[in-house]
Image 1 (cartoon, rainbow, N blue to C red):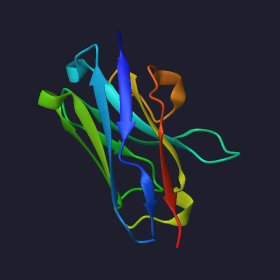
Image 2 (image 1 turned 135 degrees about the horizontal axis):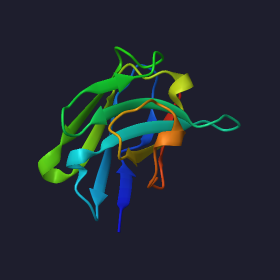
Image 3 (image 1 turned 30 degrees about the horizontal axis):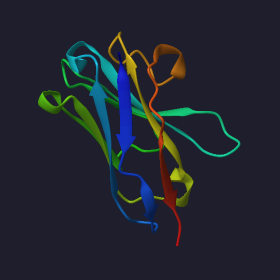
Image 4 (image 1 turned 180 degrees about the vertical axis):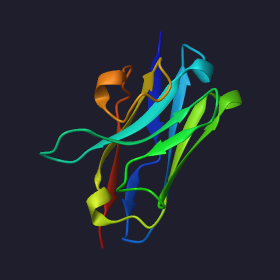
Length: 124
């Protein structure tokens, strides 16, 4: 049974860093795309980044380009999101999800198997 578990969230000051992890079980990620999404209170869930687990190609939302880096460890069946220079507007619950079609786009339509999310709060 597919299961994705996020971890690594927390409270950080503006300009700080966090690394989120998305650990998969129940299937092999090799032929999947793993996406990170976030949802702030009162807002729709938005795509942040995606990585193609087979080819390593990566995609980012404009709002996080140059600050966030997505990476994978196929041996550990885990995807990471390194978040640098965090801003208050990055505050949200962060989720990971899987697409069987690689990274077709940063929209929730293409993804499933959502994890429970991990809270990221950027505040002084």
